[in-house]
Length: 316
Image 1 (cartoon, rainbow, N blue to C red):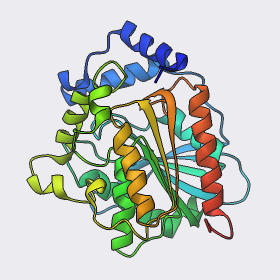
Image 2 (image 1 turned 90 degrees about the vertical axis):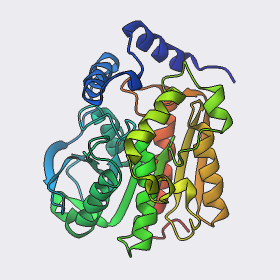
Image 3 (image 1 turned 180 degrees about the vertical axis):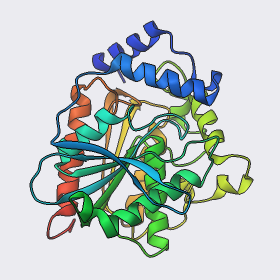
């Protein structure tokens, strides 16, 4: 494997900025550092027809969301975007560019969900928020200009984990039906014995030690959470009947093997899967504020799959 020049350039900018390991900072300081790093790498925003902030009601209180509409035409499919950040970092602003890419690339209404963050709100708070938002959109998405009959869900890293767990829970609890799940370098199981955690332990954007810390934040003090298949979908015994999946991984990523193995498990359960490991890439390459060619290829890959899932004939 050889590091892609675009990935190397991103890593150099981060090193030059002197960003410390996430585990070395209190969560609130880490969130502010994450915002600063996003601004360091940010490019020009991708124009869309309309963007607005609103809230979705839930039993735990209003959930902040940001809605992106690519144009003012007919009702579009609704893509529920679940951002990354190790369940601990990130917000609507730090993942604004990623949501715009998805809205334009997939030609859909994107609803970016500001779920509650760990460690202040450990599992299942984040998933409860995403589930509540999905159920509300299935009933009221037309009020935002979307088509609730064509729902999709996806996210990167921790967002991929929440997506994978949420579609299992929605299946088990009777819906609503999500037509496609998009898992971008997802974390699916809190086990760190896979080869990629050793090969890519340091130096490639996300460190293995930080992954361990993020999982600890998310799972909290309840030992049962580490065995819960909704929190850790890689542990699920039954993956049948789930929506078609797009699984994207990267060569130089501690989570590489985690995502690759989960794609194999989905296929073995009869779930249609489009999977690709991007050569020379690092964790974060799709959502990084600097748009790079590999990230654009990933969005095109997602767009092809979502069009197929949202078509009149469905995936089949």
